[in-house]
Length: 145
Image (cartoon, rainbow, N blue to C red; front, side, top):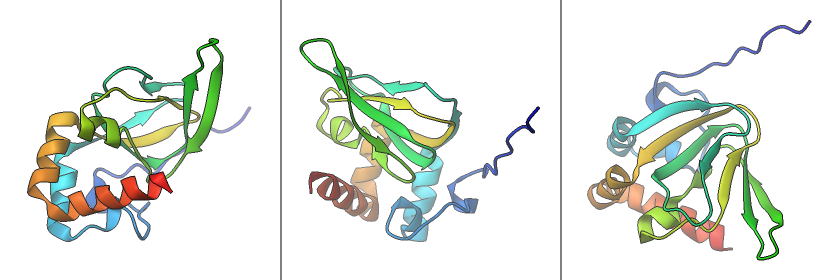
């Protein structure tokens, strides 16, 4: 019989030990406080659907730890896995910012710790915190290349 897994789950983004350079975790202090105040840290089990292809996402999902499968369904009805997103990637941002439907389905592969920011709060954050808007622009540009 195996021992149960133990996870170090921070209370918020300000005390998180998972931070790395070049992501939302290293915004200036005021922007990080704003991001922390609107985000909801949630733990997801494996095989949980965050959002589905063709639906408008309820918000933005920042993967703190874990892996998320991004897939779509072909016209023939086959599911195609496009890639696996992992730590500190932001999901749903382009659809939320543009007010359009998600082009893919996002499903957790294993246990995930995710910070969720509701659509209206995320859009307000973009309008009021320039460092967050710049980080989003960088993230979107990085995804294109």
